[in-house]
Image 1 (cartoon, rainbow, N blue to C red):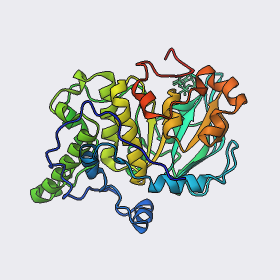
Image 2 (image 1 turned 60 degrees about the vertical axis):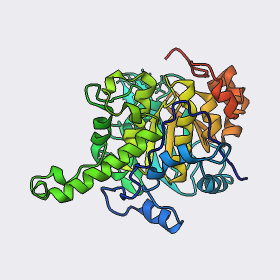
Image 3 (image 1 turned 90 degrees about the horizontal axis):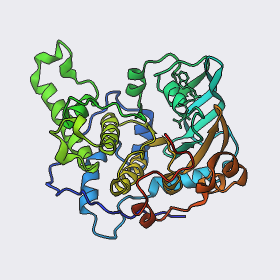
Length: 367
Ligand SMILES: Nc1ncnc2c1ncn2[C@@H]1O[C@H](COP(=O)(O)OP(=O)(O)OP(=O)(O)O)[C@@H](O)[C@H]1O
């Protein structure tokens, strides 16, 4: 089945000045990754596509498809034969976790037997408050240490690897409570998210032409991303002056400065103004088309139904269900036990999203 995605409202859209810097190749700090090679073999230029995002947002004629769906269709076909059961192996996993546990005193926050994230897919991780979703993110990205277990990212074992190294390897995450630097400008926050530049070393600092080239490329990328996330007009404002939703957008844009292979978003929609939600959805769908794998935690079932290729349900630290969104979210056992009465609202239609109330449509509120 071929899917299309139309641009929604872009109330905050800014005029395109053609200076997104698409002539400057974006930089990767780890050379050619396995993922990059795969993408190039499939006719996709990794990373460079971020430069086009602001163009898409402003140039797509009304009603025309904003986001291509080539990879979405491939992922859908690849996942179609996969059995809907917890811990099921995937055709092409980018992240594999085995026997990962984390206890806090008497509470077992995470107890994941086996879990795989399919490459290039958008996977939603859902579950009630306290299910262990954020702790799982913390463990995978090196922000917390497990009591047991192992996991690998694109074939690289990650246990005991620092968050900075994890990010360098291509797995970045955002936080439920954003961690933007309030006293720095929006642009400086973006530049801080960029990979370390050669000019930051003592010796290479002696060759300004070289580090200026890197800085120019990083600024161009920051510009493209800020335009895409509708924050370009705010580039010189202090990040602390942004609304909660805008900070979420900034954090996500900053995470993309590294051209991650896998981005983990912790409640990306929470606090985001309904008018901006469509832009955020477009941005996430665009990521998939560029070959970025997305794992997101979300209580907003509208978003989950709308964009997820695969849904994983967590409860009491365990993966208790996973599968195609429709199958999982319509499963009466899952609905009764974990989703509640809101789960059956079908908000797959953009117009419903645009009219969505400010508070997330969720089964588990009170966060
Ligand atoms: N640092 C900590 N110290 C003690 N207990 C913790 C800590 N972090 C998490 N927990 C506990 O671990 C369990 C899982 O919490 P976690 O935040 O991972 O759940 P969650 O699914 O992300 O919930 P939410 O949807 O509310 O964010 C909860 O019982 C929580 O109270």
